[in-house]
Length: 224
Figure 1 (cartoon, rainbow, N blue to C red):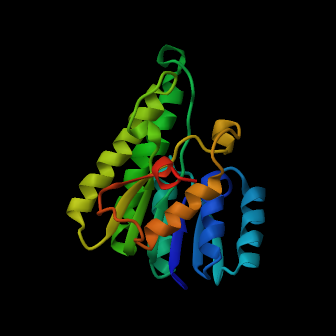
Figure 2: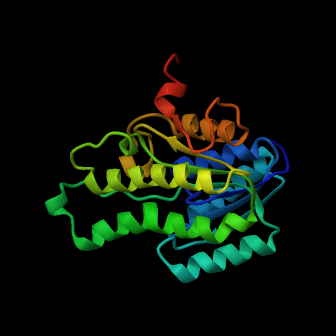
């Protein structure tokens, strides 16, 4: 891949940042989003330029705001659309269900699933090659303290399978990380660079996974 236009949501830290760096190494054009962490986004912009990105633009995107989603989609349209969309933005509230507030439940549902669906809907006419949805191992197996987060990630996988059937001209897959060293996990688990490399390989269609399928990170690296 080179000179492809790649959209990555939630790119100021964690898996999103690592994915931006991986795509930058191959000279791609990056359209990245951040929500609250503008300083971190500016640092990532400098990093991807140093690594060889042919162009980089950061956009503020509040994934829970319909107006923000529509404004971002309009910006992508003006940029000429995109070849690859990586739906990465997410949030996790790790508590027993009875201890979660309605606001915490709604934040996870909106950020991880509802607004991912809405953003994909807005960008679909503008995407030329592939959509990579970041789900989770918890989208395949539930766990205590993760009921709402797990539900959203199961939903991401179902959404991926369904839109792959609706849009056969695109390659659409779920990438399912196991626990990864990010701010969300308090930096426990697998390096985010492992996940990022798998995302780039997925965009290149290097895995024998059909559209609508799953790329499980723990299987990708099972012998390493």
